[in-house]
Image (cartoon, rainbow, N blue to C red):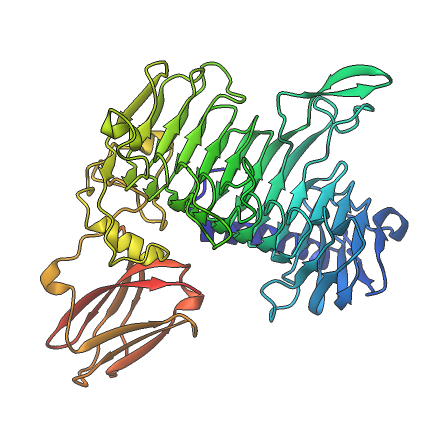
Amino acid sequence: MKRVSCILFFISLSVILLTQWQICNASPSYSCNTFFIKTETTNVDGAKLGVKAGDTLFIESGQRDHLRFVNIHGDSLNYVTITNHNGLVEIDTETALFGIQIFDCSYFRFTGSGDKNQNYGIKIKKTPAKSNGLSLDGLSTNYEIDHIEITQTGFAGICANPKPDCDNKYNRGSFEQRNTIYHDNYIHKTYGEGFYIGHSFYTGYTINCNGKDTLIYPHEIKGLRVYNNILDSCGYDGIQVGCATTDCEIYCNRIINYGFKNEKNQNFGIIISGGTTGECYDNFILNGSGNGINVFGLGNNTIYNNIIVNPGHNISDSVPANDAYGIFCDDRSTADGTSFNFFNNTIISPTSDGIRFYSTKSRHSIIANNIIVKPGSLGSYSTLNKSYVYYDNKVDLTVSNNYYSDNLPSTFNFENIDEIYQFSSGLPVINKGMNVSSFGINLDFNGGERVKDNQCDIGAFEFYYVEPEKQKSNSIKIIPQNSQGELIIYSTKNEKLGRINIYQLSGQLLYSQKPTNSDSSVINIKKLFNNGIYLVCVETQSEECKDKIYIKY
């Protein structure tokens, strides 16, 4: 499913879940039960409890050692909900093989949204060495994981990669995982990956079965969404996805300080691993010891609207700078004749090339509309542009409409999305991109309209032009108070405010209100707007002000 925007996709999921709740609570022909899981409970068997589709399992708040769920099954219209109750659930274990394990479960939602006072109502605080925070194992499928906080794990934050074995239970052809969603989770300070979804060896590997070397293949994932997650200081990769052969989207994630363990080939922002197709877009990837995005996919992968800053830089005194690319692509699992497309990414200061492309099996691939600034490999090649996009004559690739520069002003803080926007808006990239609407790309990083009047800007953003002479006013003040979720507007001349209009940068009107006989207004932006950059237009009797604001909660 193509997104309309990050926030609208989330709203649509909420509507689906509300519908399920209404069925359970309003339909005379359908009954839903609730179960309460005490803090001393460590194992929850849905079959023994009699859990049915539409039921809810409430986890009692407080600290516990570990927790395991098994044999819990809803159906496609009535997911079983597993959630916190009356406060924060905390997992802190020194001995268990996981913080929380979900084994052989289907059609369920595991969510930390059970208490409105907790952003992440389920927190896995610590697991021992080699243990994951949240493990989704066995034949688990058709589920949603959201609003979980995970930290200080002995390995991955969230791991969902049942391994194929000799009995063929989890192998390709016997089992496939479908329609799995991970969103709005906070994963930080993990020893291993933030997300480890799907197996790494799509093309198979050999194990000994009954004394005979046997080539086995991991199961496929069909229908995967990973979005709106925050990943900070993951020891290995931020997000790794493998074997997602159909309908995969990775988007709107924030990944910072990734790969702090500095393990070679385990230190990337996002890995689109073997057997994975689909889209990767609108991600903000900042400060890591390895490549920003690796693409080892099946083919027909589209990578767009991502912002990648400082891949390969030293993220602490103990992690030296490494040679790293903004984006890297090769043929680990490429299907002959498929393509890889890289559109409208903004790549700033990689320690090696901006984009390195090694795929010879793909056909008609395109690298277009990307901003690439100050690659570290400048001067290393006989051809200057190879530092920006490196490829050789063996590939079937079109490279066009990209903007390259070695100029990186010290006046900008490139850890701030607003300043990345301000910096790139001053580059000669407006209306210089190729039209990408035929590839299904209709929105930019901020959710604004990507193509206007058949024209497209270069880089992750589309830019809304404001006439310079009307951009500022001395007396009209527009002040976002992000910590309070408010926008304050007032006139220092005590003039009454006229209509207040707030636009997306694409020009779409999102808010319009005229204060009643007042020289000030306070707008609750948290209820109205997602994180992003917006244009605010305000008039008084004598002045007009247009100003861009950055909203971040």
